[in-house]
Amino acid sequence: KPVKLIQHPLYDNFGEKMPMQTAREKLGLKSTDFVLLFFGFIRKYKGLDLLLQAMPIVLKTIPNAKLLVAGEFYDKPEIYKEHIEAIAPKEALHLHTKFISTNEVKLYFSAADVLVQPYREATQSGVSPLAYHFEVPMIVTNVGGLPALVPEGVSGLVAEPTVESIAATIIKFHQLGAAHFKDGLLQEKKKYSWETMSKEIIELSKK
Image 1 (tube, one colour):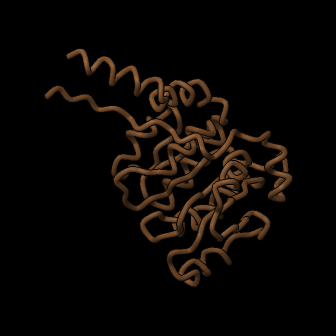
Image 2: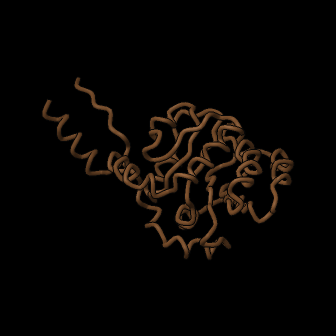
């Protein structure tokens, strides 16, 4: 039988992107902040501890950086306590470690300059498609299928799963600016449209 690999389309049940300023006001963030978003369940393989350790390095170069963590702890919170306490000023860290409802998802993505996925290991990710839906560029680590989801320099940047590499990649992203990735992000997003999937199925049916 003929076979065709098709990317699963994006879900649209999370609503549309909000104005960034509106979202930031609701979350207690400023328009001048450089907002890094970590989103989803907090588990060891997702590397939040690596990102927390990277933040003091990032803050030396980007003093207006803010790390917004949105998601429930599936590890003991105590595991992360030392890394959280090492971040100064404390205002650089915004912890929303709770269940994020479907209606709230757009709030966090709309406030972010970039989504950071500092995973130690991965197959693929359900968070990256959310970033595509809300048109937020990404920083992912070079593990599993993440680099295939986020082509280097197109819809984001790829780091190694180490504190030093994650910090350096965040700084590089800041220097380039989110606008640098806009065209590439929109182009990649097309791969995940329902129209593209329908077209590919119709073409496959003719073989």
